Length: 552
Image 1 (cartoon, helix red, strand yellow):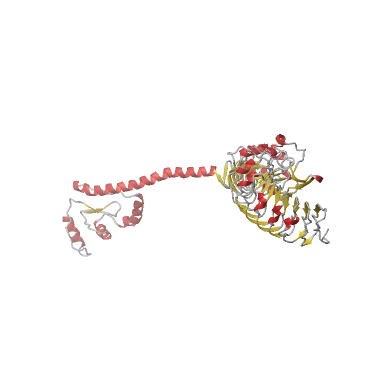
Image 2: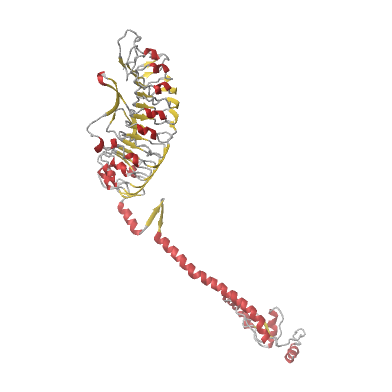
C-alpha cells in the first residue's frame, strides 16, 4: 500500500542491487534510478512521467528493468541501449509512442523485449543480428505495420513471438520455421493473408504449443502437413503431462529469479491472460479467417490439446468421429461454419470438455446422449435447424413424424423441396401438353384445309354443272342454326314466302335460278339457268309478275 518514496535514492556509494516495488500505489513523478542497481521493478503502480533521456548513465549496470502497467509516456531513450548487461526490458501497458528504437533490435544481449499495449508505430526494425539472443518478443496491441522483418530468423533461441493486434500486412512467416525453439506464436488480429503452408522447408516447430492466427485473412485449406510436426501437442509422443515445465527466462542465477512470460488466449469463449505459461497449456486458434475444406485428420493426433477454435470460417463436411481422441480437450468451438451431418457420438466421451459451441452450422439429427453434451446451454447448438434433442426444445419424435408425412425432402441452402409433389405436377403438365397440344394443332390444320378445299371446289365444280355446298366449322354451324332457327319457321319454299324472304339477303337472287343452302345463309345460283329482270314487286301486280317468271 506504499504511495510515496521519502528522499532520493541516487546515492552513488549505495550497495543496493535489487529494488522491487511492484504492485503498490506509488504515484506521480518518481525519476528515482539508484546507481549500480541491477534489478529494478516499478511495475503495477500509478507512476506517470517521461523517462529521462540520460537514464542510461544511471542504469549502467542494469540487468532487469520493468516499468510495466503504469502511465508512462513519451519515447524510450536510446541511452538504454548503451548498457551491454541489459537482459530484460519490460515497458508494457503504458502510453509510450513513436518508433521502436533500432538499437533495441540490434542488441545481442537482450533476452526479453516486452513492448505490448502501447502506441508504438511504424514498422518493426529489420536489424536483428546474427548473434540475436532474444527468447521473448512481445509487441502485441500497438500500431505497428508492414511485414515481419526477415532478420528475425536470426533469433534462433526465440520461444515466444507475439505480434497480435497490430496492422502487420504480410503472408505467413515461413522463414521463421528455422526457429525450432518456438513455443508460442500469436499473429492474431492483423492483416496476414494467403495460405498457411511451408512445404519448401524441412525445419519444424516441434515445440510449438500455442498457435493463434485468428482474425486475419488467411485462406485455403488448414495446414495438415504442418500439424504432423507439432509434437508438443501430442502428449503421448512428446512429453509427460505430470512434468510441469514453465516458459520463462532466468534473469539472476542467485535466488532463482525468472522472468515470467504471459500470453492472452481466447478460452471458453473468453479472453484470458496466462501469466505462467506451462508446457501443458496447448491451444490452436484458427478462427475468423477464410479457411475452407474439412478438418484435417492430423489434428486428431493432438492428444494433449486443451483448446481448439476453428469458428467463423468456411469449413465444411462432417465433424470427424476421431475427435473423441482429444481426451484433454476443455474448449471446442466450431461455430459459424458449414459442417453437416450428425454430431459424432464420440464427443460425448470428452469428460474434460467444459465449453462447446457448434452453433450456426448445418448439423442434423439427434444430439448424442452423454453427461457432457446435455450439460451445455441450448445456445451451443443454435442455428442448426435439423438438430433435435436435449438441451434443445425440439423433440426428435416430432421430427420423425414430420419425416413420415414427407417421405423425401432435400435441403439446399435452407430451401426445402418436396420432390414427390413436384414430380406429380411436372408429370401431369407434360402429359397434358402431349395430349392437348397436338389436338389443338390438328383442329386448326383441319379448319384451314377445309377452307382451302371449299374455295377450290366452289370455283371448279360449277364448270361441270355441279354444285358444292361448303361445310362450316361446328361453332359457325351452331351460331348459324341458332340465328336462323326463326327464319326456317317463317320462310317456306312457296313462291310468296320466297319472294318476301329474299329481301333479307344481300346480293343477286332470282326465284328459278337461285336457292338458299340448307342453312338459309348463302345464295347458290344454277349456272345453266338464265335470270331475267322483272319489274318491282307490288301487291297489285304480284300474280302477273310471278306468272311471267314462271313462263321464263
